[in-house]
Length: 452
Image (cartoon, rainbow, N blue to C red; front, top):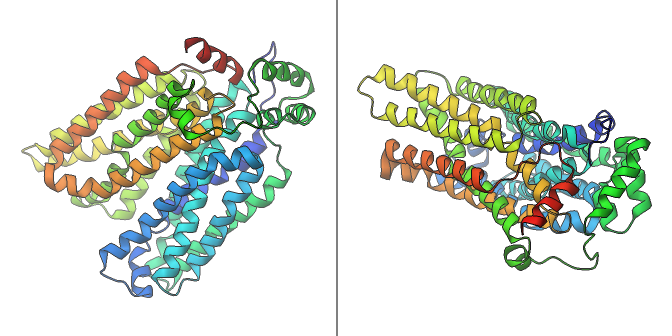
């Protein structure tokens, strides 16, 4: 949706964006909900001390998310974005209730897999929906809401989990609470507008124009319809296959998108989140305070991204973010080789906080916003699903191998490796990423096609 002589009012689309951000809130909540209660869950369900089974409670959610991400593109294209939201809310609702009522490990794992499927389907659909309903001049700002909602979900899970050691069975309440936003999401989507891009792609032009009137106002809807008509509708009956994503005419943008998500994970962000409690404990700081500190750094970075996304642009934020993360890994390497324990500790904690802050400024929020912007309408949903599946595979592998690599390589070599990936990301972004700030989705698509 392009900027016209007077930009479309942002207030019309804001309520729908806020409803959509319930998904990243739940994403953050479910990723954090088992961290604090895991020990009491293991006691209550009879697998205390079994690290493999404790790990399964966490990792089955990731496995479900991988499956969900693979089918998310098909769901979003077949039934539309609104119904895709409702379909992702359903397994999170049932899965949350299953975890809350679990009597044994099997019940807990079943619930976590269901939740994971919902978490896999949801994020690609949120990115699609927010990009497709937002006016161009605030699209970056609205995209930043996704990262902020994820931070708030993580912090919400932490706060809700505080009484878990003092109140018996409180972990069940933690899971029950997650069903409330899932139910609200499913109900709220009944009243939300469908993506005009999806409606147009289906040949439902009058409905697409009505949707644009609700999102942009009547004066801007006609011009937005003209913009939609400039791009290829794609054959509505033509099914996009994954082979076409990898080797077809749009393979370059799919390569850029999936590589961005790969570099995001190979930067070591999830490993840093995982290891933060250990670093803070060495400094004599409680795990709760450590988690809050990392959460606040994440939130501050996300707010900075919100303020700068539509001013500096996506490419600049990515470049500075990955560069800042690389610099922070230098602090981590120096801390590991420091003779003075006090100086090393300060450098380690400072480097970690800087790493999280710089991640949240660009490498965290930008890929989820940029990818649906650069993917053409015809392949957008399935290309987003493919890129997210790459994200989930590497997320799982980094989490699985981090502690083993730390033992085998030591912190100096491991953080040097993460820093190298961050600098590779800087070079990759500089050479391959197109700036999309302030451009309509149709302008971006035409610009990319002209390069191919």
